[in-house]
Length: 435
View 1: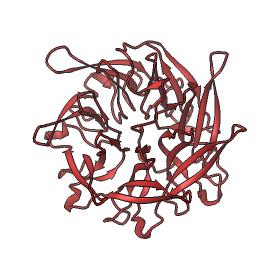
View 2 (view 1 turned 45 degrees about the horizontal axis):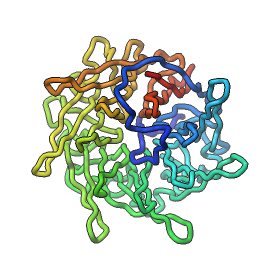
View 3 (view 1 turned 180 degrees about the vertical axis):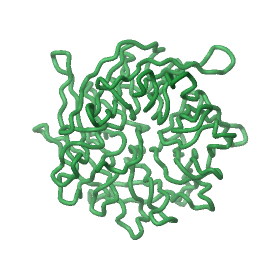
């Protein structure tokens, strides 16, 4: 039986990004050759879902949500953390850094969700949607040893408090603040319904080496969950310390998601405000069910994606622009499945990334010529404020199929990403597209 994690990616905002790999790539990018760097098998990972990260040497790191054959796990495996190293032959070598559910009752965590992040000492941090002492998911740390192995430690196990008031099922990546605290979201838990409607949380290191969890906000605090329900993305900071994210449910009467802001108060509490409630237009033409991380552009606008909605009901890329009165205006940059047979891509686009020319890049889970998803580019038009979409690659299940993770750039403008695979003949891959 497969995990019950929702279709998610993510991406981790405010990663410690090295000079080798940048979210903001130099110059414009037109598209070019596609290459598979690694093809997964269930023993080393199945269905990678988070965006990759890189170290200074150009090695790639990521998570697979299943596979690995942990000793105390289900048939499909409970996920892995992997590393890809370029070799002298021009290929890439994969090594498993950790296989989840290696401890009894999966107390070490299971089904990793979202991307990893580095600290300044080279340790890796991430989250699992299940497992841990209480079974509600974990935040974990991987520490490298001198012999090349990695040691896993659980920083926090969710659902450790009564009624899971501390949160349940983190399902995206984490971010650091300047003080070394970790921030993230849980899809459920908190308060309200039997398992709650989700939380935004912080983990702070203590002097004895443990970590203390505090809930910054519990969603569905208002009638009809007008403040949002079920955050399914990670968080990002602005320059003044406010946090931004999305919920896949709640908001307007239709309950198909929000974009929210969390503002710190002097007394240590946080105030939530909803910047936008989706499905505010007829037939949800403004989008529905955002579940991917947001990004800021150079002008301070927020860009993101929705799983559904838009003019064709197959998802959107949207932008929120701040107004002088403190409100935000939403505009749809592109609605997927706008072309015949959805050849432009459709459904579940993960986080987008930006180049220095202002172009946006991303993937869709479905659509394209073969129906296995696409890599796309959105370029602003010179006049009229519109955007043009170009499909850079059609996935054909050889082995790339059904991408669900965001992408990254390197300094040369190459794109790197992952595909999930169809679970029958393909189990995921890591790819590179050179300009």
